[in-house]
Length: 278
Length: 241
Image (cartoon, rainbow over all chains, first blue to last red; front, side, top):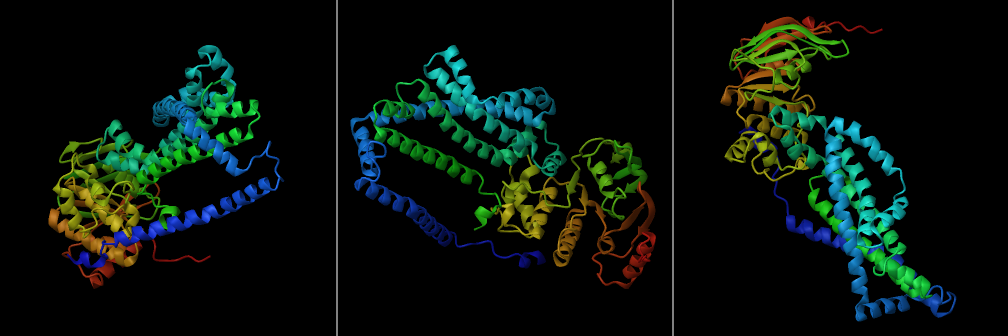
């Protein structure tokens, strides 16, 4: 056929492209670590010369030492583990509830007018205001913490699912209708995949809030967890413990977000965006 | 094959899209529906496709009145409307229950061999529209509805795709209804041209073109007809105020 000549060869040098991607990634990582390294060196130097009083802001080396000690005696893993466990269970429950409710509200206009006003009203309650009630209902054990985290995760995920589903292009849905798709098939083959980008954004901001609430929950009454280490450090006048915990939160938060981000770029590699064009 | 009996479409706000349309289409015929914007020609196509069922009158396929999407009807939109998360080959087999070799066959027949695993973001506008054509063909529709399918493409791509449509028509003997505002396109492709005019749109004139296809784009007879159509559409004199 005469058409074949008009389209260019689809073969690309996949391997070279991948190598190129890696070297730019490494360069970006190197660039991003310049400023933190300079700051750390300055901090260490100023602590060493006594500009920063050690009982308020200990040197990075001392903080690292305290982290190392905790790792060696094993307490680090226990506290990190229980915090991650709470976050994970809360995140799972919050996300599951948000998916079910969000999908219903997003797809069925009736469900939206029934449930959305109520959910929006609940959303405007600062989630920490639930704490006393949850403790009263469920005590200071695990359930109240997990539920608090789940409540925090629920709203961003819910909002993003609803707006994702409602934002699906009517033109794409019509394509399904031309093929006589049932409602279920429309949801499965067009609406859910099209709402996926928005859902993943919701997951990431949900995770961010989840970390916030795990700290809140552990600050309030816990005998384990990284949040508990914060309180413990405050009560025992050990700033290195507090800063170690903060560093732990930073590292863990970054790692979990990177996991979700990796998942996102895996799932959304079909998207045509500025980020992916480069 | 396809009969339209006294079909009118009135929108909920009281405005009328078109009224009293009567048309019967024979098997294998290529019909061009021509009209200036706002005369309801795209609405007519939506009614015929079954996407819009708030109309009065009857639409019959093979003598049976239909009021919903019919499996014998395939539709190609103005935009490709590909699912961006599906590869080209998956987009083509989108309307099929399960994947089969048919998708590959139509991929080849629209001239995109080797592009199976590309995503829509990697395609040019013309290539994307080829995929959309293959997707519409894969369910073996006997009636193809095209809603200004080439209007967003550049002049050369447009000509290539018009030739592709002609090849498809010769190969599969589809009945084709083509809504367009491109007079040259209708003259090149159609056996019959329906001219809609007015708001609400009504059939103003029906022209038959007997020249065999493929036709020469610069044909003198067709040029004369173009002049006639411009007259019919009331577009020949330009008022400059």
